[in-house]
Length: 112
Image (cartoon, rainbow, N blue to C red; front, side, top):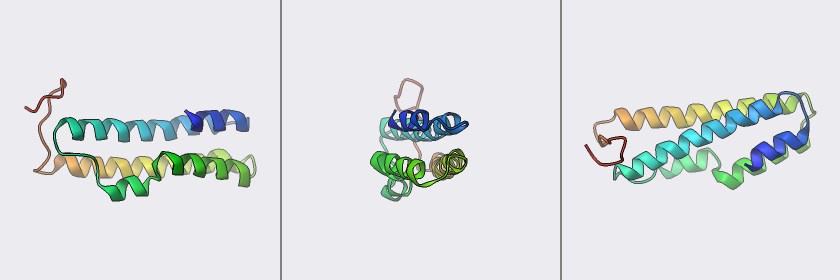
């Protein structure tokens, strides 16, 4: 992932674990998206995709943080970014899956 490469290249203590947190939040979003599509409900709302920046937006944000912040502030800002994205994605995911319109989906991806 480009985010992990940027964090590793920054060579700042704590940057790589923070980047893994960000990648984990995005991976959960992708997992949620796949299961929504497999359940026949389509992709997550557009506002969510815009709110978490999209792939290019997140890479740009991490690059700007690395370039503009002092070394000690980079892992803190990266952790904050990961936490915000994780919170937004998790809240929307829980809201969707507990709603009455969410499909029941087996592990195999077939509708229950």
